[in-house]
Amino acid sequence: MKALRALAAMAAMHAGIAAAATYQVDDSLSLPNESSANMKWRSLAPSRQAGNALDGSSIVTVRLKVAPWTNRNAKIYLALPEQPIGTVTAAWSTQGKLLPGELVSGNRTLVYAGVIRAPMIEDTIVLKLTADGRRMTADQRLQFHFEIDVD
Image 1 (cartoon, rainbow, N blue to C red):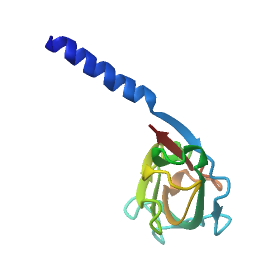
Image 2 (cartoon, rainbow, N blue to C red):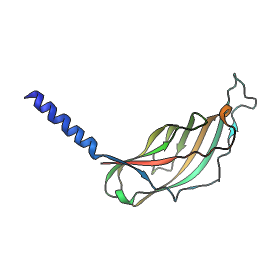
Image 3 (spheres, rainbow, N blue to C red):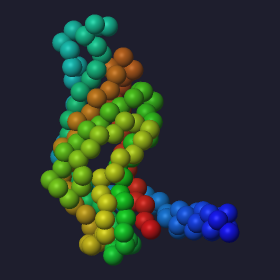
Image 4 (cartoon, one colour):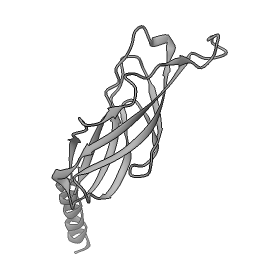
C-alpha cells in the first residue's frame, strides 16, 4: 500500500512539472539609454598580475509584455546565452518591480515571482558587465532575453 501511495505521489509531482511551461517574453519595447555599453579596462596596465577584466555599464528601461499570462502565477527570468568571447558576468539593480541580481553567461536568474497583475511590467535596470578583455577582438552584442515559467 505504501508503494502504491509513493507511486501515486510521484505521478502527481510529474504531472505538476509537466503542467509548467516556459515561454520567451516579448521585450521589444525595452530601450537602452545608450546605444552601447562602453567597456573599459579595470586595470590601467592589464597583465597577469593585474588581470584582464573589462567593465562596462548601461541603463535599460525594461518593458515586458506579459498580457498572455495576466492573473497567472509566474516566474520571470533574465537569461544570457553562452558568449563566443567567454564568460560574461552581469549584475544589476532595479527600481523595485523586478528583482536585482547577478547572472553569468549560459544561465538565467529570477527577476520576478508572483501573480501577473498587469499586461506590462516596466522597470529601469542599471546593468554592470564584466568580461575577459583577452578574448575581445571587436564589439560584441549580448543577446539578453527574458523567459517566463507559468503554472
